[in-house]
Length: 72
Image (tube, rainbow, N blue to C red):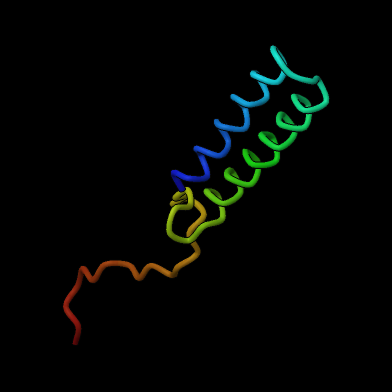
C-alpha cells in the first residue's frame, strides 16, 4: 500500500515540476496519471478484504441472540 501512495505523490510532484519548468503536455499527463493512480488506490483500499474500510453497519452475518434462560 505504501508504494502505491509513493507513486501517487511522485506523479503529482512530477506534474508540478513539469508545470513549472517543462512542457505543459507532460504536466497534464502526469496530473492525469496522478488522478488515475489515486482513484486506483482509493478503490483498492475500499474493496480490499485485508485493508478495506470496516463498515460494521453493513455486515450480513447472522448473530444469534444470547442465551438468557435455562434450557429444559
